[in-house]
Amino acid sequence: MNFGLLRSMAVSAILAATVLGVGAAPVAAHARIYFVFEPLTVGAQCVGGYAAPDEQVSVTWKKHNGNLRASGQVMSSDSGWFQLCTTHGGLAYGDRLKASDGVSTDWLTVPALTVVVDRTADVYHGLAPANSTLELTYEVGILADYEPTTEVTAAPDGTWQYSEDELDILAGFDATLVWTSPGGDSVEVDSIAPEVDVSVGSAQVYVNAPAGAPVSVELRDGTTNALLATGQPINDYTYEFMNNGHAVDVAAGERVVDTALWPDINWIVPVITATANVETDKVHGQCGDGSNMYGLINVEIHRTGQTRGSAWLDTDSSGSFHVSFRGHPDLGFDPANIKHGDRVSVGCILATGDWVTGWFRVP
Image: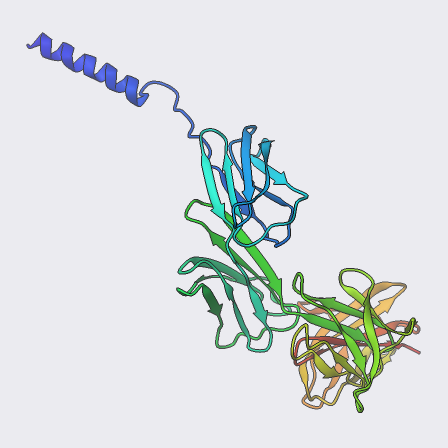
């Protein structure tokens, strides 16, 4: 037996075990560092991401021209999250970011990433890094209980779009777009199809618009187009039609306009009627004459400030509807025992997806 050869093999095995860590506890890999924007907000005063937990992270934030916005040393949390904020301007496309914890370093140029929810053409589109693969999550229906996610690819010119044969985008539908850089940075943007909702007999207007979109909603005469009132903001989503300091209630036949927000926000308030029967728990009525309507409505029974019953249903081609509130709960239906003094709301969806609601008292 060649003992010299055996001794040489044993030494080699010991050296290999020492180098490869055989017989010792495995060494954990150092956490990769990367930036995360959920969502990316132009004008934001903070940037952040993930690094190894409880580590000091050096962050540098520059404008696209190289001028410094902010820099500093920050500590990552026990989850690895770190964040640097500034009071000197806000985030812009093309900003250059760098983060390092001494072991791992990440660079990111903030991409021009956008998503537009086009309720007229029934298409999603926007901008993204050229030839990149993106994840788009979008809404598919008013009563849908899921939102599908699909991959889309940006063209060489940095544009992208997505549509389906039966895609029907209504006002208020949202979408989220996610781009992941080769280095693992995650950038998310979201948007919504603009929505303007009014109630007959009320001056308040609900407006759901993409971030930064201009809102200049107006109430006009349905025949002469004369300006009756302009929407004044109350909070982020609620406006009130005002004229010379006085609230102006919406009436059937008047026109709601905000073509700067979206070109097809220019429609006539339909006539809405409803009659409830406390003996049969049935409600019947009318949403306009059926023209310029989506055909789906929501009827609710209200008592002492609470919703007692709700029903989603279709109107016929003339806009009329009939619904019984007797039965068992089901998808889109909650029964109610209609009583004298209850209030009935009838929400009519226009072809654009905007809502007009009428309110009625049960005698």
